[in-house]
Image 1 (tube, rainbow, N blue to C red):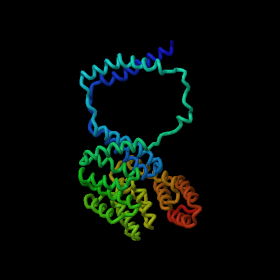
Image 2 (image 1 turned 90 degrees about the vertical axis):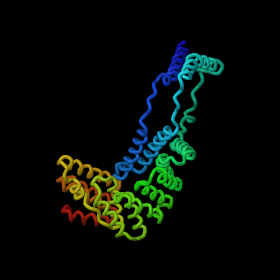
Image 3 (image 1 turned 120 degrees about the horizontal axis):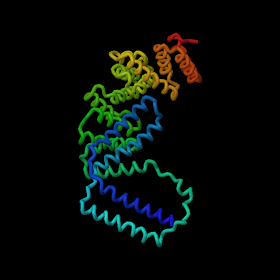
Image 4 (image 1 turned 135 degrees about the vertical axis):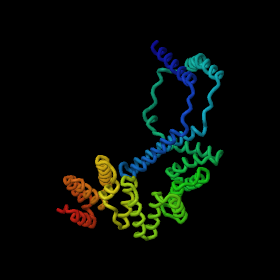
Length: 366
């Protein structure tokens, strides 16, 4: 008897689930709210990755999940759901109240079996492909864009997702369409140039370089374009020019720019010298209150320390960290950073020599 009582409760719950949406009043959502949130989340992931707060694998997993939600929100806007008429809602309510229970009983009596055993665990342990829902959503958006090829917003949303899925040629085409139908901008030109590099296997081609130059002509502070022009100079063997481009970026950028660690590492890679962390902090802190200034500098130092825990081969980074602690009067932390740095680069004689020379110049030898 208890089994049938459970079935009755399940039937009531099913009927209620059908009737509940029909009784709710329709409230249209603000256009683009979800899309804007997901775009901000993607930008936040890029900032965390550039700052060394998360690893590349975690960042890629987060990008895929947020991109899936972003595409779902975009698809929902592209295919709005029509509101049923009152007569249709009444008909559905009658079917739910009477037809659904009768149909359930009619089906269960000849087919149901409460004593049926569970499925084997091995049959349930097969995890679905995590990218499959994203691929399906991409296919839906592509189908929408085939019918609406002038939807610039759709191309703008689709292009970065195609790039993350490794479909670089399609991403290039999507960015071209985004520029054509959503409007030209320095950001879209820089993104197109990046897609062209990915399609060329990491080489900054002449076409990609032209896109970055167009982006800088629109906005001289476009960081992505400046960075990749530096990469182009490096690939051409012009390391001094690459270092000059990147040093100019650091000189005019905010001290808490999320891409600073990436550019500083690039300068070190080509043999240049990146500005010291404390000097950056002091230059950006003019006009701030003492509390805000200390909080900003502390945040930069903590991010640098976190990055060095993951990549300890950066000698210049260790020297900047030690100098920052000395500037803040934290000599114990400076000594601890010195020990960690020597342990991290101890297996490389040349890096250890550079480290010891830098520490000597900071007055922290021994």
